[in-house]
Length: 278
Image (tube, rainbow, N blue to C red):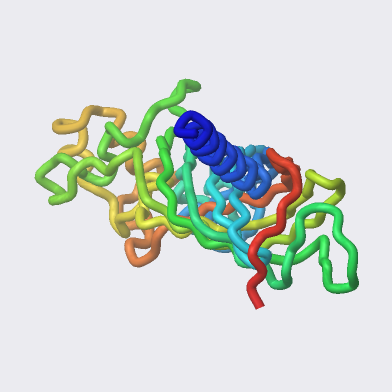
């Protein structure tokens, strides 16, 4: 009898564990997204999708409820901007440019406008498509570069605004920065275990150095050359007229970047119902 009780106990534990695993998988999705990334900041204050670059994202989603999901994603792309593209003659004369790779990891929630039922269901209230809001907290890697004499040069180590010299109390900024991805999207089921998603999320950052431009004025080139090297002075002020009195950046605003993409996601397990929020 004791043996039978022990076997029943083991069977119960195994069944519970398998059931929990099945539930976890049935409410989990993985997906891949392809889209465009662009930047908003000192070198592009207003224009959406200006010099947008191809980017991709890998996603994991856990469907907590029919109106809410947890979502994590890794997004990789690049951003760039050139003053020579501007219509403003002051910006054209400033003559700055940059390019930076972006590698981001973020996690947060999706909140659906309507109950979303994953899997084949019956009834008029079983919606297979909905819009959603996305709110996440993330961290991203950046490394602004430019070209000098046909070669790519990293801007961060040069301290082009006097970082690390007697001209500034600020040290060199970090390659890793926090961000808040905030966006809107829409998703629809196209198969029992497959959905398509379209979303656009702006990334609020807390740095003004994604483009290596923050200070409103130019640093003293003689101090830059002596402390950070000749390239620091050359790349700090690339203005066409060579004047130091011009406008360099806007220290009152932070930089942003945006990713917009289309995604296909696949559910990992068989269909089970999510808890419904009313």
